[in-house]
Length: 209
Image (cartoon, rainbow, N blue to C red; front, side, top):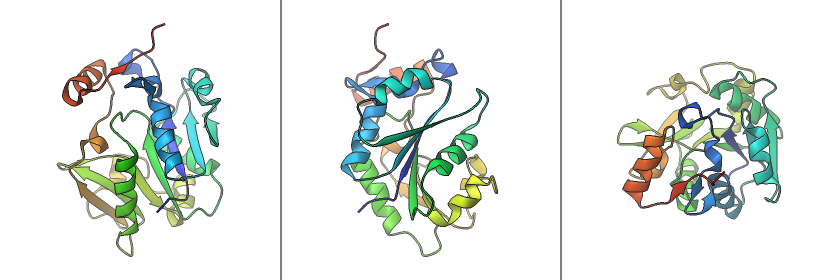
C-alpha cells in the first residue's frame, strides 16, 4: 500500500507566526518537517519533493541528513499555494500514477493518518482523480491526486490549488469523510499553537534562538 510520490509545501512566510517557518516547529521534541518525512519514508513513498520559498535557507540545513528528499525553490518571494503546487508537481518525474500533497503545518499528522488516507484512495470511485479528507464538514489535508490530472495542474489549467477545486460536485473530486482531527488541525497563528498544546497534550515549541 503506497503512493507514487509526494509534494510537501514549505514555502510560506509564516507571517502570522512572527515570520518564522512552520515546518521548524518542534512537536514533542521533533522538527515538524522531520516528523512528516519519517512517516512518509516508513510508508515507502518516493520520490519526495519539498517546495521551499521564504525560509528556504533556514529549512535546508534540516534536510541535510534526511533520506532521499529533493527540494525545489521558488525563484521569487511572491508566490501562492497554487504556485507551490505547480512547482512541486512539475519537479517530480513525469508519469507518476498518483501523488500525495501536504502542507508542513499540521502537527497531528502521523503514519496512521497517512495510511488511512491512502487506504481511502485505493478504494476510491472509478472516476476519482482527487481525494481529500473532510472532518465535521471542514475540508482538510493531505490530499491525493491522480497522475492523469498532474499535467493540467502544472500547466495552470483549472482551479487547482485554490479553494474552488474542492467544490462539492466538481468532476473527479471525492470527499472522504473522517473523524480524525489530524486532517484539519494546522498552525497558522500563535493562538493555534497554544490551542494544539492544550487540546492534544503535545509539546509544540520553537527552538531557542
